[in-house]
Amino acid sequence: MWQAYRSRRRHGYYGGYITESPYRVTVPNSGHWHVAIDLGGYAGSVRAGVRVLG
View (cartoon, rainbow, N blue to C red):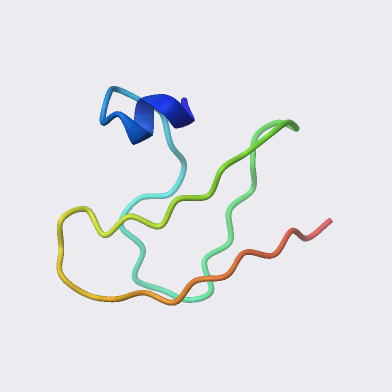
């Protein structure tokens, strides 16, 4: 799916348009996950960090 995202092909995702910080997501299964911060064409700048809680 990461290659599909990078190639702008159809892909699945968790999240959406986020307006709150921090944003917490529970992944549905174990495995290798990628986190992408995408402004979806909107202008702006973002500072982001990821922390795995477990």
